[in-house]
Image 1 (cartoon, one colour):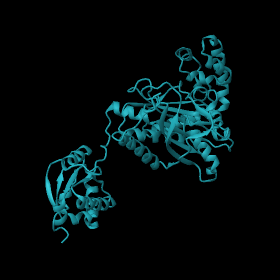
Image 2 (spheres, rainbow, N blue to C red):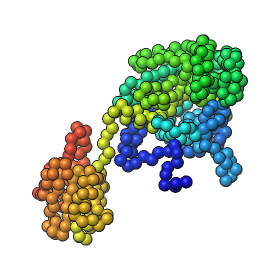
Image 3 (cartoon, rainbow, N blue to C red):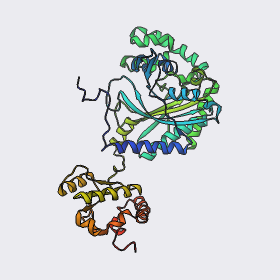
Length: 447
């Protein structure tokens, strides 16, 4: 066992790459807030029964993929395999049902499933999710689909298709289950062991089986849309009407059932052909019975989960634009004790004014410090020695153009100048232009 090697199915995100994750996460949270969703944070582990009852004990997730263990108190605990069950538990435990409905929450969370790792599929992965508790309107279905699409649009994702379906309510789905049982019983001997077990308990799970043989058999299975009751059919038609009103293109795919048992009525997926087999980047739908199943009052609800690793892979494959990682605004090259003390003083003031300001903490020589500043991508450098500190004047160097400007050191510790610089920098960054310390830090500006 190599303790210096990450566990299979996990991945490090290094400092040079993390800005991409931060960009995606910030964009998702910003879009969600515009739709009225507020962030919620839940524990990384829950009682195993929460997922057995919520996700469903006939699903692949519960049967094959969960990380479950007994803790020191003898409780059976599971690392969350998805975000909805924990959010639903928090909704119940904290009395959010007594507040104004619907309750709209969102989250960025790590999830854990024991699956075969491949591109776009890890054993520790991350999701952005939204949950809307307390709305039975088809308008809510269309709104969360619109929210997901807005995130893709804001990130510049192209060529991603929306597929929707309805799997009905418990009443009309019972008739569908009987039709599936009749169909699959005739082919029972060809099914995998898991699907033979699911046949009587939950035959819809066979439609979601990853076995090539079972998938082939399922191709000719009865279609759920043919068994919808009038109310479910009307709900699905209304969802489609609202999506058309928002000019959101979609395909009705009667094969979508989603992999979790809590879904009812509307289910949907955003799918891309750009990243191979793991093409579903976002999936969700309605789960009107989940809160009741967990012990609460009947609370119609819905939501979605968006795989962030898959989204990242899709964006990189498509060449989507990412912002550049942040670079230090100023690196102070100091030589000698007095200069180092002055560097600490200047850096403290600059940081308080909102700038990124660094200095050497390894005792390097002049040339090594300049080389280090260049590797960090510092926008400007200033060299301080005993003479500069005594005279109160130094040269500020633009590391991109090489231009040098003589400045008074007093301007670095002047709140007025730094605030002025902050305002101008904000304006310039909006226009995507480089800013110029030298134009603001000139000798005599404070007279």
